[in-house]
Length: 230
Image 1 (cartoon, rainbow, N blue to C red):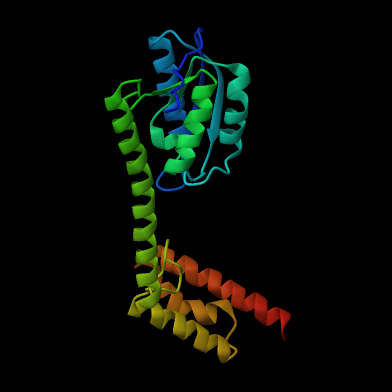
Image 2 (tube, one colour):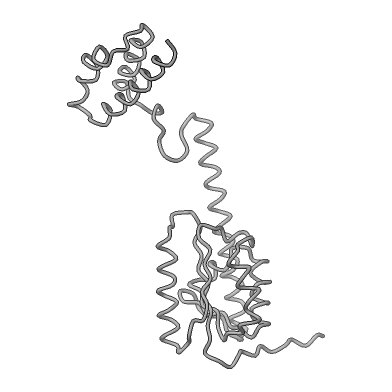
């Protein structure tokens, strides 16, 4: 039976930190929040952060992250005592990739410290807990992807839009009649602005400024097209 190498942590107060956010319901502020938490953690535990790595708008399901790869390549050179993460899932959401990354970090004498999750230690219970947390990180990602694909497929099958509403989709009857009226007048060569706007656009301004603005833009585009294609 192979003997398991005992982890030996680097004897210093150096720390590195890794921050990441995906594009799902997150933004640049997420990086700032993670950095603030990491710096507070380091100060509270007597560590000095010597380098920070961050990957913005990048999924944890892939290892193809520039700063993540840079961190893994430098941890053996810097040899910090700890790597500070907000949660395990910031490092990744693939359990096989996580296992490989943590092995490389551990082999460099660096312990992973988590701010919002229990920090793993060398106890048997910690091994079980860490495995469950890594599995949950991947489960969440796969379930979210499945739900998004199901919703987008349903929308496509029912002629609904995915994402933000696009002008022309889901308009009510009143707006549809206004658009049809303008287009009809354009086809009949009534291209002077006031001939179109006075009976149609002006009646809608008082009800909805936005609708009037969109109609005005459409009219301007029609006039430009007509002037170029006389």
